Length: 262
Image (cartoon, rainbow, N blue to C red; front, side):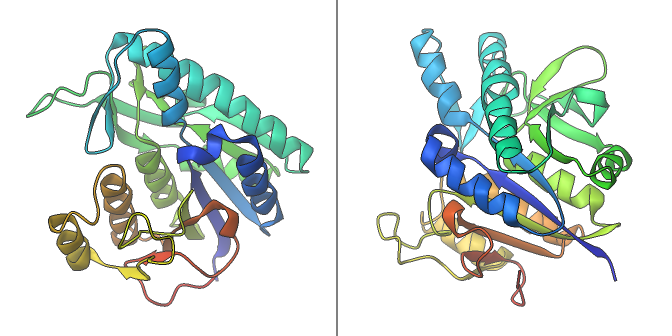
């Protein structure tokens, strides 16, 4: 039987609010066994861009990353957010190590080709060094990974944090029983955006397309569910989208599989 591994992704308003982030990290620290934390920080990057007079452009929840924006997201994701999380986890008793995908070549990517939309310096993942991640885990370290990758030729690239969580989860699924959990400020995927009691209990690929066509699922939730469904297809055992302060409880939206427990 494979050993349990949690891959947790946190983003949204959670990383901007100290009390919400502290609560999430406290729950994360109490999860038994090996774990990896992937974080975003998109709203903080947007706020800093605005202060610097840099326009933020989004398409279906994905950031257009020009040269100036790349500098901002590198500072915010790889610097401020990553090191705050590491410090808070250390205080909670978790021996965290802060990384970006570029560190030690953990995640290699290539610049997304221009088709209908030019996303700029956005990276699509080519490979994950799961052997190195396993070494860190086996030495009692908890990787905290920011969504900045590189192309192996010196170019940093902004990579969607949900995608980062998916590819990391997929890369270690051969060796671990992986539970991929997307944590944010809502209790799951909501049928009615303003009603926190309307969490949809289960989504598969068919219902996802229906929800998207109806406009119930939109914006940043689209790539999140896309990534969740692909993770299930690639061998990840369980995927859940849930509220950050419910991490460790059996609730939220289950994606692609009905027998989820953790």
